[in-house]
Image 1: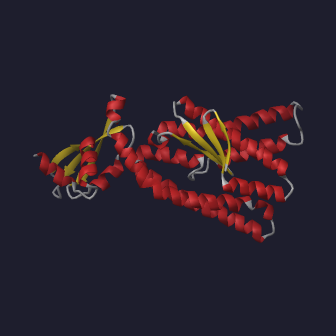
Image 2: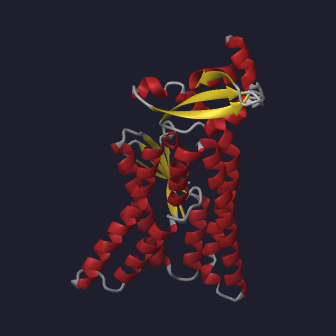
Image 3: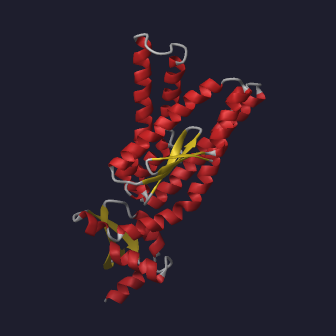
Length: 294
């Protein structure tokens, strides 16, 4: 649901966020819901400010029960450093707000009835977002760091798999609370269901994101000027789609093609592999490309 437009970006409320607000309203704790809304909103503003600092244009912000999603022009996922810094901005913002609340409470300034809840809310929101589950900030940080060592494709699939287990765990906790009569904690179930949905969606979009990564990687050397080299050794029968899985950001890859007798058949550059994969298809054996070069 669209809420308002500010600084050229749209602010939306996710249906799961509205559902959580409705639960709080039914239990007569709407004031707490408003505190949570403020914490979530400021959490997301932290993301937006850092993203804009990197020159990333934010189109819209959607508030979720545990934070939000900032939709940007381009893909921050393709730059691990930017994605990590933007993802960390949310929990850091909540940590700062909790510190401010603690300072006010210590000096007796502000509403002493709501400050403890404000502090607790920010600490829980910041800590929860560091869980390694997509689309939580911790999941994005995990994917960004893992991409530097495993490649974006395998990192995305790994993050989606971890997200699925974390979300199933939250659903289980939510069901347990309902079973023991503590229905006021139904928000665990709401958030868990949303995380299950997000994990399935993330797994489905992993290949699309990886193809965008490969397309951008073709210009990475021209954009950076200098890159460290990384060697990948592949049997001549290996398919291109299996080779590019090992391509990571910020490195230039040289693929050494060897036969079954371990003799070197030739070397392919990163650009050659990507171009041939786009042209001939992902099932093409690397040995065929080496033969064509001779």
